Length: 146
Figure (tube, rainbow, N blue to C red):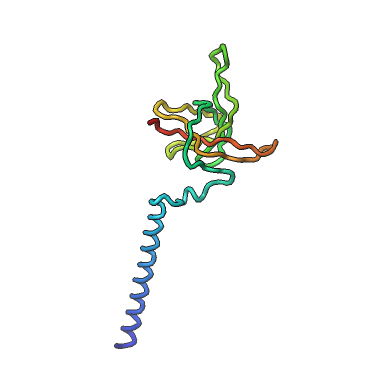
């Protein structure tokens, strides 16, 4: 076999092995996300966020007023309280971190009402520093009612 043919076959073999390696690596990475292991989104949780294994009902409030957007898809909000003997609405504690779904984003002073077919569920806690020290608040998300 000539040296030129051996050289060309070596290059072709190297290219095929490299492509095969990347195909296998890509396939196994997709399988990790499908099997419930850590996905890229979960691995990049911001500092101070702790997610619960199972969501629990959040019964303190159904409507919220955004105080401050803190992440691309999350905002701190005050919970709605109805004042006794009046029809006035007041937003106060507890403060929560609301997670947005893919189609929504938040802005300051926005009023968020729980959709009719959803319920508010606590899915974790968020720990952050204020001027008065550290504060931990529930992380809530709107989930379709069963």
